[in-house]
Length: 203
Image 1 (cartoon, rainbow, N blue to C red):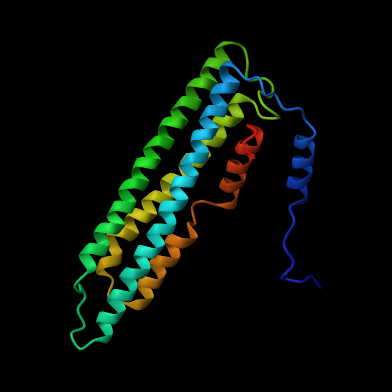
Image 2 (cartoon, rainbow, N blue to C red):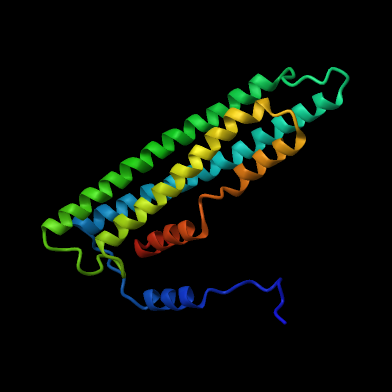
């Protein structure tokens, strides 16, 4: 019987990484390979900024939950207690920054599409330009990452709109859990991000 506490090992991914690690690194980049590495650096910055805002949002949501639950338990039982608007404004500020970050991601995706088209016109996109990925593979990965974050941002905007009006502790907990888990940023999306960073020597 297998132990449920034993970490699951992705043997295929491990083997792929071993193969990639054996490939030589090209440190003298120019043209399209250089542009892709620069975009990967911006993508990495996007992920860092998003993660910080994500954590800030969790803290704000927890403060909203605490405020509303305390009010529900009081004699007044106010649905919109004093201080709620301030916290909602804080959450809106987080979402505004997330929307701004996402706009930057959209620009990166468009830049990658242009690079793929340029590489095709030059007769490229037939082999790896860094370690093992072609230009087209980078373009496809960026698009999938964009789609995942677009869905996640839409979910977070819904949570922002609904959390202040929630009359039940269970609903508040559900919103916080949904924000925290980021269900649309799947393991597949995370693997794509890590692979991009590894391919471009950012890991």
